[in-house]
Length: 136
Image (tube, rainbow, N blue to C red; front, top):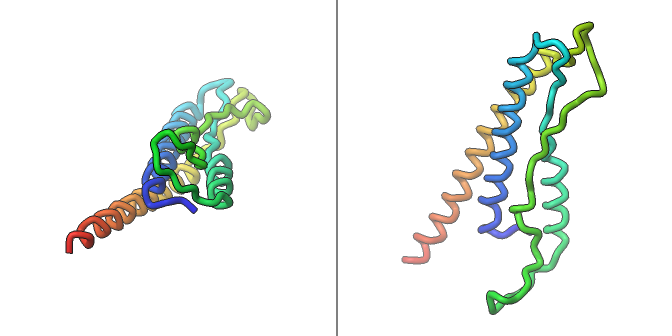
């Protein structure tokens, strides 16, 4: 299980991937009429699922020194990948961008980004609550 300190950095990585996806989708939309342009997409969710699966199955280790080895996969290794899709062409000019699909994906991505931003706010609210309650 992810601890309270790993979750904000994991959510940040996820938000970074969503931001990159937004940029890639905007680029696809901007090049909808460019001959021979091939659409790109961002792959991140599979890496995130793998990270969560590996970390949820591990037993937490106690460390009493900074020199001890941690058993968690560093969140830093999670990086989204931009993939160019060369396999299909929908039009005679060699462009494979479907504007309707790109617009739907852009709207979905914006909504999920906003949801992630709320989750980050809740995580920091939990940390703030834990800190202030300890003072009482």
